[in-house]
Amino acid sequence: MQKQTLKDWIKGQGASKGVSDILLTIASSCTGIAKIVNDAPLDGLIGASSQTNVQGEVQKDLDIITNDLMVADLLTVSSVSAMVSEEIDEVIQNSNKSENANLAVCFDPLDGSSNIDNNGIIGTIFSVLELASNSKNITSSDVLSASRNQKAAGYFIYGPACLLMVSVGNKVAMFALSEKQQQFLLVDGGDVSIAKQSNEFAINMSYQRFWDSAIAKYIEQCLLGEQGKRKKNFNMRWAGSMVADVHRIFMHGGVFIYPSMDKKGSENGKLRFLYEANPMAMLVENAGGMAISNSLPIREIRATNIHQRVPVVLGSSQEVEILLNLYQNTQ
Ligand code: AHM
Ligand code: MG
Image (cartoon, rainbow, N blue to C red; front, side):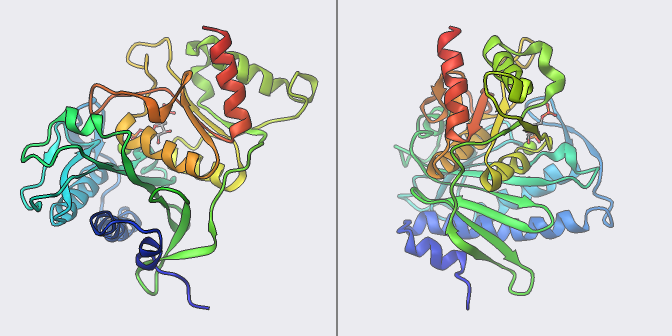
């Protein structure tokens, strides 16, 4: 049987033409990125560049190339009013936008880029926001105040297969890039949901000494396994790439944690709100999971900086609830 194309699926979801144009453009950019990533070792694109981004992180060649590709492609879309990229300090204005364009696209062009050199899984994360204003110059605060008005979110994962997980409001669907057709086709099963229960957590254990008491208590209980209060054994994964760890949660359940830490520069964790936490929260919640930042739902955060970092806990609802209770009882 013929598989549904991304274009047809978007149409069936009732997305506006503006959102649809953006999603199809991002899908085309990421088809290009999948190829660039695939050829990177042969093209000498493994390793660091000489540049750093606004967050002081050393950029990889691929961070810059993938950013430039996405920006150039999205600048051609008339419904895009502005953009925020992990790799660019300021809000990017679109001089090609139509008069009534009111959508902003926030993205991390290559998430988990520390995995590039070891051929680990990497991805692209994006969020489409509806702005309250269609003024010529979109400010940081215009984008930030639209963060609760997310019209679409998704991630691409460059692994053994190139997959897209996407939502335009209610359902979450999984697509795979067909090599033959060079387009994204719906993977059988359609809607994706996250198991309510799980016995797997994803956290970087090497930061244990910097955790707050809620996270420390939660992990301590998981590690006690059958002998502890949880009365079940837990498994652990940490890919060092949010897309890889979150994708595993979509497939098998689990909880992903990047907490605030008592460590200089990590007081709000590492992950950025606009283009990492917020889109992942939309996907996870639309798949029946939960996404919190300490004791607040991620979607309720009011960030004040376009590159603001926030603590993140998301995944299977029953596990996230346990952590939420621990936060509420330790405050
Ligand atoms: P990046 O966007 O610069 O790649 O950083 C985000 C990544 C996430 O994908 C991942 O969960 C995290 O950094 C891993 O951080 P750490 O190396 O501290 O474990
Ligand atoms: Mg990144």
